[in-house]
Length: 156
Image (cartoon, rainbow, N blue to C red; front, top):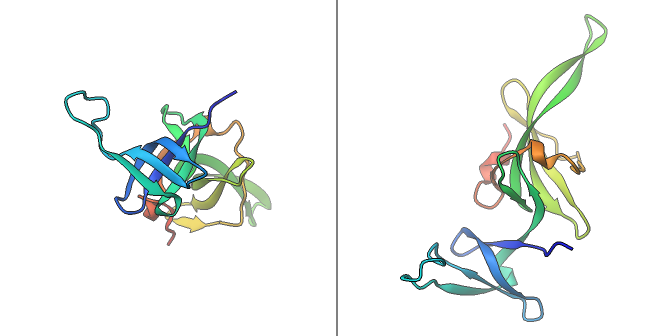
């Protein structure tokens, strides 16, 4: 059985950190505020926040094609092929496109949402797609997260 792994986005400090401790009863999380947690000469600073002061993100347990662990809230980019009907040839033509989406968790499973599809020039919003990604995460790349990089999902 896999033990769930979490990280948080601190709304005050605007940083993402791994979670050291979650108190579900007291609705608090504890995390290191600096990057010196493994340096015995520099004491680390533990911060405790209430749940409403952070965004808690669970790991998917998968890594992208570069080996980066993928968490809820991450924005991933992946290539895809779509088709478009060509009226002059009366046939479908395949079009390579680049997609961006956010990982979400609904309490039971992870899924991709908030799609932005790049056709020839710009990203278009296609939020009506709900994509099940089982077996797909190894082909995508984490390019940021929705808290620190909201511009990654902006469309023209």
